[in-house]
Image 1 (cartoon, rainbow, N blue to C red):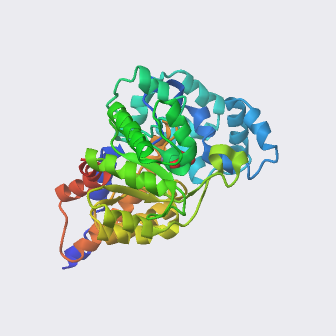
Image 2: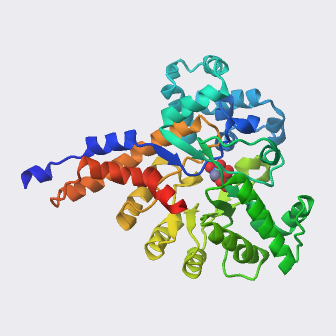
Image 3: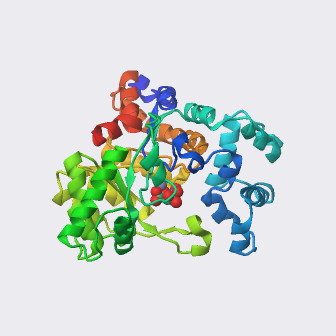
Length: 413
Ligand code: HDL
Ligand code: ZN
């Protein structure tokens, strides 16, 4: 048995993970047809809201002074503060450098003007292919918000499907500011009423049906606060029960619940001002148990919720756990959460999504995640080998494909 004890499947696992073609199941990217909504290039990378929050830990200028700056001025301040005056070893800072390195730029030169020159030489269409190829992704699943005044016109006028980008119908306002969203719905031609009468609920369903027809989404999604509860006597719970779940069930669409966001704990930081709170796993358990004909994609934002979410996935086959989301997308936590999920769920989950807001970020987010996930999987296959069960190359590549794309596509049907 000596041979078995020394079996190291690491090289096979790392090769399988590095070669894996990934479907990125949640991003904030847009196909180039959406114009400036698709962010890309060094100044968009540097003004990512994660880096804005980190910059304000050092600078004492008024928030409004920062927001009054041009994007390049903001990027200059962020570069100076986080990269020059302090070492960029936070995950979001390191990510910028990984992107530059993977593009073949001279990171050691630390020359922002050189990096800007590179991006000026590129068009967005060629850069989409560069980023997707370097990241190893075949598809970026978008976050599409019909309530967004900048995005809605594209869908209502000229949208032509781009197979590299698939849509998601994101409906946060319907659930988190129901009364106000009813007014917007009336402006869109749907007679939704804040009292949520039967007619009003029917009109919300019609709104969802129309946009599902228009977008052909892979799933419906919403980010939800830590105190998201179901059942509950609230407008949110009524819209979930009477509108979201029936429309999803009738169309075979998962409902993606992204739970644990404490919105704008520091409003002056704008998009960077959200935080995290521990959420109620009972809500997830109740929905999965009482709506067996619905499918639920779930990611939770608090580290403290990860173990109970993985246990819940053992109980409900209509629950698919995905990603190490936002404040969890750091090497130490991706490692901890992925290891725990492998031990509780085997290969029956979706380990990661990029959440990329800037096209270039898929390059670093997937490079960083692949390294960690390969390391965890190596341990798992080597643990098996020590029993005498030596996974074949085909079995390892099968499992890796399931984790990085096929679990998702099977689940969305
Ligand atoms: O609600 C979400 O989808 C979150 O991912 C937010 O967009 C958040 O601002 C973010 O970008 N996290 O990475
Ligand atoms: Zn997101």
